[in-house]
Length: 555
Image (cartoon, helix red, strand yellow):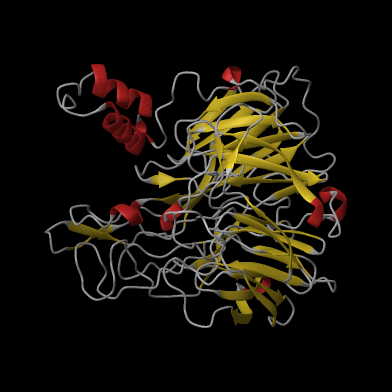
């Protein structure tokens, strides 16, 4: 119940409300930290994050143009198939020009520590959010701010923009989710709330993967933080099941909901602390759904099981019918992956499974690719470091399977938030070891691997690895690292052709103190000759925080 309250309401209760007596010995900072933990975002400083308080308000707010026209990057990928490839025409940026990219401007997100909402660019505007809960609309050329909106909790997802017909004067809506499992629709021109819908009642549910907008429906993937809290032996683990929820994009009304684990959890045994446990649970969906127009299907990857025995659809690729949510097929790559935070495999304490799995989620959106001969297949990968080609016409039958590791990765994973693909190859950034690899999509052959040594962050340990999603344009791949470096790599041979260290202080266009940090989840977006990327990511590996959106153009 506390987690359904805003951090402002919790902070007020501690200061002057029903919890004043209990909080009398707490400092103001401690009260704010409690409110932030329960509320899902920092306590909003009055006016500090609002667009109207910023020095760079756009002089005018002209009507928003058609989001489907011109050069755009709309959502997690600029296509329904999640290839993360931008055409030469839409990118407006060639491989020869990339080495001449220079920082054009920086925008600072107030109170933010993580930039995990990938920027969407349509109609000459940017839409992006932050862990502080604010969503902003900016001018893509100058970074001036049109409007802001404060969500109930932090916003991790890439927004999507689409047409609406029954919402008064609103012509287009911006859709996103927050870390309290709320989905939103705002007027894209003004930032006014059109509707808000909670898609899962479990108190630890969250929306991390970007909802996918397609033909008047918003397909929302649901994950959770229950895996983390299960380290507490007093917690009755576990009852969350991942799901995809289809909403009417006009109204927010639920059309269907399909759980990744079909069977509801039931009591099983008690742990060493005497706490009642339940199963099955888990199979959270961390990635943005992939749309298959030809087969009228939706594909997602699922995470590990929180309980034992492992749920049958954990660590799997699932196919669902777009109209009804009916499960079409499931391909499970790892069958016994039961995992919980705080377990090391040497002994069983609290909620640790007796046989600890490797925590090899399919955390990455599947890529649906069409070869020149018309054949289609899914490229699926995740934390295990294997890349697979699956046949969607044969219920996910494996066509080939290629490892990109020398030794099996740890629970932090090798491929975490996604690769990109062009018409010949698929490209992946590698966590833990640090580097980039290319795989031939027809044969599965690894074509090249480029190690990327980490750069230094003063006063901190070296941070190797690239877990952020890859973005591709013809001939070039962009990859952000835990070390805060944004690198451009040649698609043909993996050579680094450009690099920018984002870990620094910035003078921002909106006057908010700006700092860059690690890049660990969202990728860059490239539109109309400009490159946009957020800098700052803490994640589970204690990365370097930051609060800036950076815009680059050719000098």
